[in-house]
Amino acid sequence: MDLKKDTYKKYKTQLDAIKLYINNDYIYNIFFNYGFTVDETFINLDSNINVYEACFIAQLVSIYIKTFKRNDELSVIEIGLAYGTSSLIIANEMIKYRFKKKYVIIDPNQTKQWKNVGIKNLNNFLKHLNKKLPYELIEESSDVAMTRLENKFDISFIDGSHEESIVIQDIKNSDRLLKENGLMILDDVLHTGVKDAIIDFFKDNKNYFRICIDKGKFKNENFLYDVKLEKKSFNNPKTMYCFQKRIK
Image (cartoon, rainbow, N blue to C red):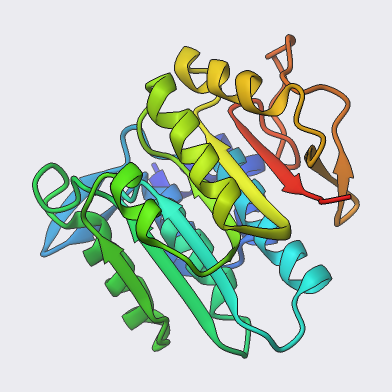
């Protein structure tokens, strides 16, 4: 029995999507093996982002860069590092940008809870590619860390707490720091706390549009929050939403 062939056949659609949208062997192997090795120990992905979300993130960052960036600084803030899967996907797109970059990662539990696995995974990824990407890891709660930040960001990726009060604060802090046309990406939107925070902030906020991807471009989504949750999509996953800030 060829286990690699069997794995590919079983997950062909998802693995082919990773090749198409992410196109990185390190990340491909993480999803193929459903885990990665840090300090000679194999780590299962467990509750990390799925393939649909991974491909969505990669496309969002790539399209944003192609559409809105020229030669100025590309800046990204990420809330919640954990095992670092989303960080690898974001970093993979950022390193393609030839100009100045700023990457801030906030995770108060990276050392204590996650044993630095996420940051080691990111460092191994960059070493594997022989690339440099300046980043700053802030091990404080997001409500404390973000209030001290002043520079603006192109993209905010929110994947931290699921408690409504914390999510809404992360959204409001991201709003303050986000540039015009910037993207706010939220994971785990099926969780009640995340859902309620999304509806609370974006329902009557005319400066934001929920977007999906259509033929390699951003497209406005018709609904703030989907009521039909059956779909699986690389361009508009049911578990991750993206909002674009447009100031009229």
